[in-house]
Length: 290
Image (tube, helix red, strand yellow):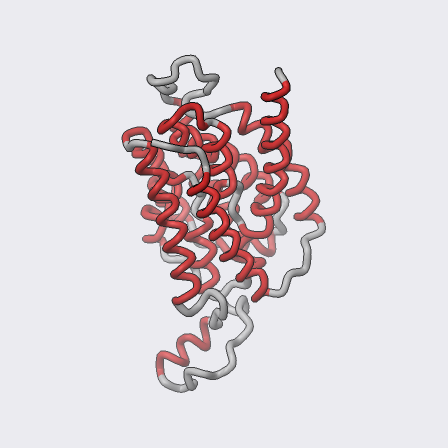
């Protein structure tokens, strides 16, 4: 390994530290950080860099989200009880999304990634329920007119609602197609269902795992790039980039799950939005050109 390659791998390990932080604190599983980073690392592949990035991201998310789920307390995971239909549809949608990525030009996936993240930021800022979530009981009272619209917001998490199973297929398909794991959709949905940011981001990891597993299997099981037959890929996955990212991420996940930082709920929510905005800008500046 020459100096340039060593520098490249070292940078990926360092960025892997960040994916560990985002996995624990924001439920991202590494996807939103890994995609622009791998696009940058594999810029020599041109328009195919985005396809490799989404595939590599899926593998990284399987390991990160799986490990994070394994060390999450059972009292938190019980929030997904009675969610078998949702989990099944997430997996089915993920297969469809991963297959679609093989058929669509990388530039389309890249711009869809940027557009989706940007729209999500706007939605979280403008639509009620994320920055100042209402407890489910209060939301029903407001709907019946018993509580004035400017009444104090209850603390979320007392009696959260389950996520609708019908969300599974579209969330799984979009998440696998973009390589994001679904947390950008599931965390806001869990938040608006009445969960705190701490619980919503923790529950996003098992949901990400369900999406990333079939997506990674599709990415690893198929043929590599016809336009770059000499690229050192496993299917569409860059194994060196994945290994470097995981080397940085897994120790951080272990430490933060054991001793999670105490972050006020509102600051946690604002930081989540800020990170999404940073990732969108990073993708715009990355080297994944069509």
